[in-house]
Length: 310
Image 1 (cartoon, rainbow, N blue to C red):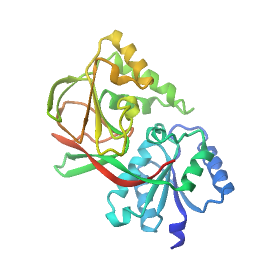
Image 2: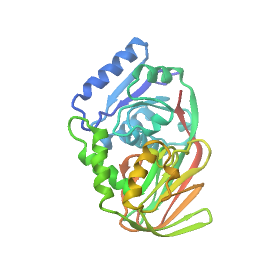
Image 3: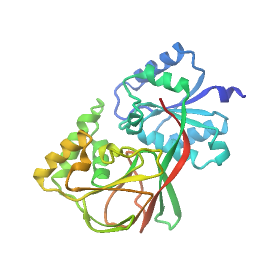
């Protein structure tokens, strides 16, 4: 076994808007040192550099790659891993130390940003589970066939717009949770709706829709029953509620009961075809993606990636 196979390859993605990004890493570094972990460390300059750094780790033979980041950093790592040969990918385990604007996939496994010591203990124990990935297949503006994978969820419509607004409104003091409140309120009273045509199982939905969440995991509360190991996607199609119902909707969302809302229509499926989603933004794992041109399909790839869990 090479030295790189024994060592962890750690990629540190500083939190957007953080006033003291080095402070977080210093705490992690001290805990790694105290527990005797052997690792090599690189820091990403920005989101676009994550893919390059993951490729570097893979090419240098690291079999444990740990992302210190959030859902979007994990997404970059996953998509990079999925570009490698299966025999190489099957030897690599991906882990996370939560450090992002959104850490929903880590929260699914009860891996908390506030508990660095427990998180590193989980990584040391190295319990690996093969997890599912969602996959969107689409054409880009140049007519090229593309695919993009996601661990947590894909959002079409309002929630993607909230993600965009939230990132814009996250201030230099790291008030990320507070930023979500004005972002959501602003979008609510715009009464955004999008003309969509979806095919889910035997149903055809052809009407105005507020938002669609396709979840491989909990989907920021919109697919609370989704799990990334059953070979299925959970889908929540949300029609525009009345203003009075919006207050109820927020309560149900934050209490994990959004599927009880009368404007939310849940599905469980292996495939979603989006034939039309006029002017709707699309977000994947907390980051906006380039809007596909024309119809696109979302499927699930079952037990395809090694992930370190508690």
